[in-house]
Amino acid sequence: MKTVFCIDDSPGYLLLLKVAVRSLRAVHGPDAPCLCVYGGDKAEVLQSLAAEAIPVARHQLRLPTEKMTPLALACRGCFLKLELAILPELAGDDAVLYCDADVLFRQPLDALFSGPLPPYMGMVREHTAPFWHEHQRMEYLWRGHRHVVPMPFPIWTFSSGVVLFNLERLRRRDLIGHFLAFAGQNVDKIGNLDQSLLNYFFGKRITRLDERWNCPPYLTQSLEQGHIVHFHGAKPWDTTSAVLKDLRINHFETLRQAWFAYLRPDEREQLAARFQRGK
Ligand SMILES: [Mn+2]
Image 1 (cartoon, helix red, strand yellow):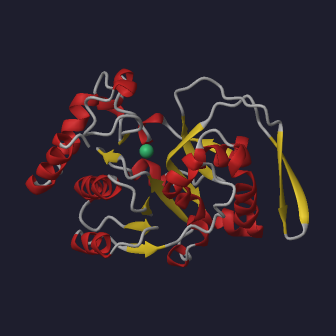
Image 2 (cartoon, rainbow, N blue to C red):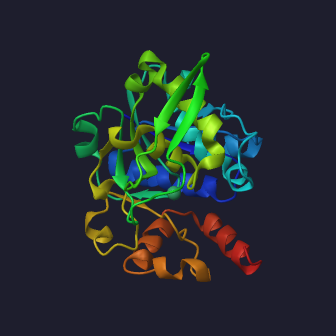
């Protein structure tokens, strides 16, 4: 099964992706199948990906941007993962493991790849309180028909940092067409970007994955159990931001050092230079 990453030209993504792929190859060998979906337009990024031997699928977001909030527009790269089922480069793949670029692979994924395929998608639950907001239902228009999606509130939300997508199911009966219509028409009502869209539309159809497949570094069990560590919150280079102070606990320091170990000396210097300039 391919491991798929999505990036655009947002700062930091490319370096995160390189480390993610290097760690995937360290765990699963140099031929571990992967794909980078690239939503940007920079020749130097494409060169960098080629130098790293990372296969690329170029894809411009199909989701309409008219209704996007300024925050969503600034983070539009995170919506790319929602469109994997329509990518020509993945037309022959029935399932893929999507991972954010800010992950570190630490232990093999065999148990995840050989387990039963989730009927729609598999995700790990967020470590937050049950989520609720004022919209009790959302509607969308698709091929001339109006559809109503009752909101499954309050719900425990699932993290979209790692998603085992059953692409074959999403393509069947054009479920992906329905979902993307819903997403484009309701993107102004969501709290947490792409993650909200997946949780609201698929709700209880999401299969819960074991925590080891998307483990933040601040959990006490992350060092022992984290097969995929997800630097959700503070990125590995962020040792100072006050707002994320509470998330730089437990194994954050050890795991950020593990992330740094994958950098080349010139990459380490670039990061250091960025910090001396104040990011
Ligand atoms: Mn992330």
